[in-house]
Image (tube, rainbow, N blue to C red; front, side, top):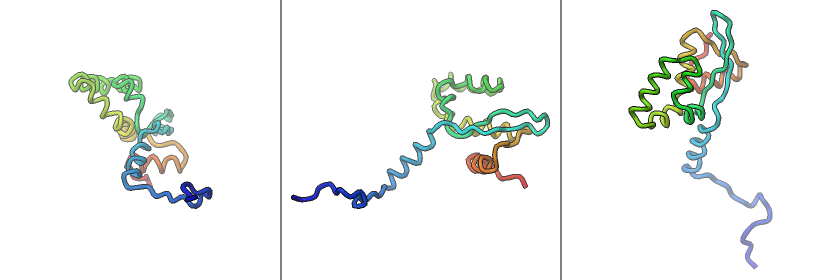
Length: 131
């Protein structure tokens, strides 16, 4: 009787194709946004910052900037969402957290997580470390 399925797991040969690796890498981007503490260098106020895909923006759109205190950005996003019949919301959910963190970090906020968390956040946000 020919052996169709080997009983020894080591006999299996797994090799992912380039397409499979690409799909897995892109699906990894759709996980929940990563939270990191940020601190205002002048006032000492601490709050949460985020990087990665924004499910919140996907579902709530222009309300997210309003909830985060960015009234002008929220109004602009509402305008773009209406003009593009919602397509804006589908695109910006990939970009919003990075844009938000960039605005925070250029307005006196600094990363306040652990060294490893800050390192990962710097890499994802494409910012250099401060020496």
